[in-house]
Length: 297
Image 1 (cartoon, helix red, strand yellow):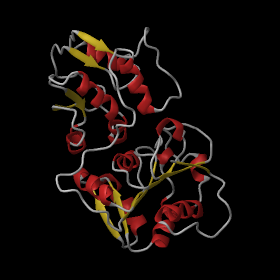
Image 2 (cartoon, one colour; image 1 turned 45 degrees about the vertical axis):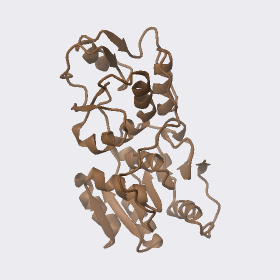
Image 3 (cartoon, rainbow, N blue to C red; image 1 turned 90 degrees about the vertical axis):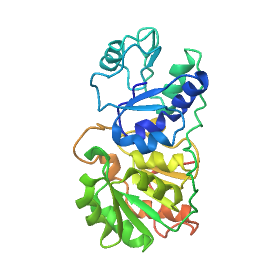
Image 4 (cartoon, one colour; image 1 turned 120 degrees about the horizontal axis):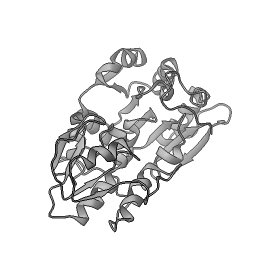
C-alpha cells in the first residue's frame, strides 16, 4: 500500500487500512510511507511492516500479490506501483474515476468498496495506549502547518494562548521551534517527538490548531478540538463527527500558497476563544456573534 504523505493523510486512511486488514487477515501488509510516521503506524493495528518511502520515489518492493494506491489519482503513483510488478493493482483510473470534492476518508473507503473490500469510515480511532492516559487539564495549541496558506497568524495564536491560561502546551515540529516560542510566550512547549505528541493529544482536555495532522490526531483519540479551516473546505478534510468545532468562513483557495488564505485570516481570536470555551464547558465567550460557519458533531 502506498501512502507516502503526512500525518493527517495517514490518519484519514486508517479505515481503508483496516478494511484491507480484515479482507486479508493472513497477509503480510506493507505500507510505503515516510519513516518518521512509525509511531503512528504502530497504533493503527493494520500494518505489519512500514517501508520508509518519502514522496513519489521508487518503491523498494518486488512482486506483491496486491498493490493498493492510497496515495492519489496517479499517474505517477500508479506507475510506481506498477513498477513493483504486482499480481493485482487497486487504483483510481479509467475504470475507477477520481471523485472530486469528496471527504478524504470516504474517498479511499469507496475505492476499496469497488473492489469488494468493505471499510467502515468511522473506524478512525487509534488503539488505546498500553497504559491508557487519563484526561489532563492540558490545552494543546499547535500553530504550525505544512503550507503558509493554512497557518493562522502567530500573533493571533499568542493572543489565544494568553487568554487560555497556564494549562496551554504549544507544540510543533523541530522546524517550527521559533514559531512555537513566539506563540508560547514562556508557557510550556513540546517540539518534535511524534510519540510524545500523540500521547499528549490523547490525554489533553482540548486541541486548538489549523487544518493539519494534529487535528486528525484529536479525531483519532476523541479529544475535543477547535480546528481553523482555510483554504480547504472542512467537508473534505474536517472531522466528520465527535466533540469538535470547525471554524470556516466558507471560502476556498490555493492550499499550497505561501501566505495565509484570506478566508483563514477572516477568523478572529474572539471566535476561536468562544469555540474553545464552549468545549471547555464554560459557555460562550462574551462578544459579538461569530461570522464563521461553525460545524460541530
